[in-house]
Structures are given as structure tokens and as C-alpha cells.
Image (cartoon, rainbow over all chains, first blue to last red; front, side):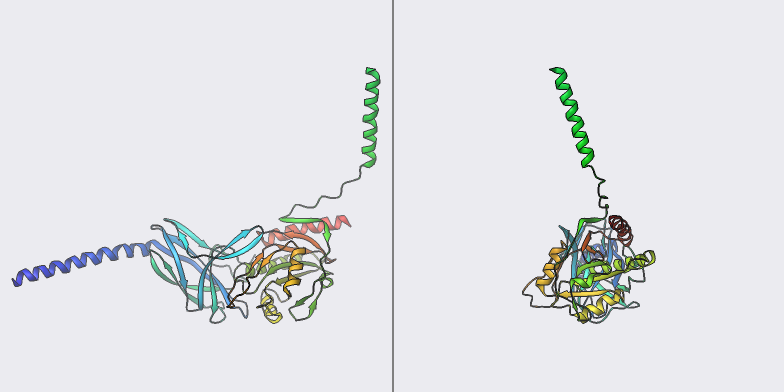
Length: 163
Length: 209
């Protein structure tokens, strides 16, 4: 009996191990498949209470959705884009940003961006801002974005630097 | 009869030709093609009462004397407004290097006077260029200036918090040294395109005088 119970227990344990493995393996694969690159935050003019962050999401995995973002540097983060409607630049808050399978989504000046509201203090060149993006499938992705003064320095990619 | 008809037709044609010849005048130089519109006739602005970044009153006559580039925006705008002001700062350097016989002023007109005080405007525009100006005013005066420059904006009403977004035109408005609306520069803007457009506008304006 002892042996049989032991065997049964071991069998259950191994089942759990396999089950856990099955759960964690795809998560790990997806985290590797989705990456955030070229992130930067626009240095703020004096007195600013808002800022914008830009980045590139490189998704090598299945379709995903960016649901939210947060940062210790700001009270609230919102997903925004700009739409030109009849000559009017409308900054629009998005409930989520689709990240299609095997696609690259760029957050760039004048387009998609993360808006940082109620920033805790001025963001000056040399600083790094921690950002966390929450994806529907890939889960949270945390990274650090340098603060760039676009008056004098070219942003990492796709941005508008000095001309 | 047929001959008479022919003569009549010939005479008519000759008369029309002569009339056309007499009526013909050299055409006005066509307005240059730019990223936007040059007004066929510059338009006088309404006499709005604004306030500048030093909290001093600012009237339409204060635009006179320089070419003025005007952008409608607000300082809480984290993305397109800094982008536009960076482009204008770059344009300012390019124009200063090229035009020694013309002067230029640059204005951010804040359509968000509730949050953008003159002090706030001064520190904001000064960040992009120490010579930049900030203007704002009452909603009625801002409306009047916007309407006269084919600009629009929308400030949401009844905001409980200070975190609201403002929709605004992204055109750059160009006034001539008489302080009249001269051209509307439509996006996308790059400093190179804006400088090239100004070259054409300037040459055309010089030709007209």
C-alpha cells in the first residue's frame, strides 16, 4: 500500500510538473517573441506636467494587444495617437493598441505615443524612466527609457531630432 | 450671300481678336505652389486683444514689422506641440542665416488660457527658443483669431480635472510684415519644406511690389 500510495503521489507530482511546464513554456516563448526597442522619453520644458514616451514594439509571436502602461515617473499613462481630421490635429486616447502577429508597431512623434500625465518632476537628459507595458497575451514588459532632449540629440529611432 | 457671310465672320473674328488684344494684360504672377495655400490677396486680421508671454497686451498691430509664423497649440500638449516648436526653432535658424533683409517672429498661440498663463507660456516657449513668443487671450478673441486664419480648436468644457486634451489645427500661419494673413502652411511640416516654401512666398511677394 505504502508503495502504491508513493507511486500515486509521484504520479500526481509529475502531472503537476508537466501541467506547470505546459503553462509556463508558452509564456516564456511569448515574452521572448515580443520585445520593446528604441524607447525614449521627450525631455520636458520647464513647468511641464505632461511628457511623451516613444518606442517600438517588435512582435515575433502571435497577435497581441497593448492594454495599458505605467511608470513611477508619472501619475497616469495613457495610450494616445494623433489623427489629422479636416486639418485638425486631434490627440485621441486609445483604449488599447493592437499588435498584429509578426509585426512592428512604432510609437513616434506626431503619431502613436504614451502620454505621461502628472509627471512627478522634470524629466531631464541623463535620466532614465522605467516604463511597464501590459500586453493581453505577453503580460507585463518592463524596461528603461532614456530621457532625450530632441533640441540637441537625435532620438534612438524614427524620431524627430535636430534638423 | 456666302461671301458676305464669310466677310462678316472674318470681321467678327478680327474684332474679337482686337478686343482680346486690347483687354489683355500681363497676368499677375500666379501664387506659388507650397505645402499649403498662399492667399491671392493678403487678409487683414480682426483687431483681437491678446496677452503675450510678458503679460503685456498684444494687438494685431504688434504683428507688423516682421514675417510672423504662428502655431496654435497649448503647453500641456506633450507630442505635436513640442515637435512643431522644434521645427520652428530650426526654421528660425535657417531663415536667419539666409535672409538679412527680413526679420521673423515666432508665436505659440495657446488656445488653453485656463491652464496657460503668460508665465507658463514664457517658460514653455523660451525652452524652444529664447526669442519665441507666447500669446493667449479670452476664448472669444482666440476664436476670432482662429476663424480669421482658417484655424480651429476645441477645448472640452466642464472638466473636473486639469488633465484634459485640446484639439487644434496643426497648420502654421504666416503673416506678412504688414501683419496680414499671407499664407497657411499645412502639415506635414519639416524645417526644410517650410524654408523652401518661405523662399517661394518671399520671392512672389517681392515680385508683387
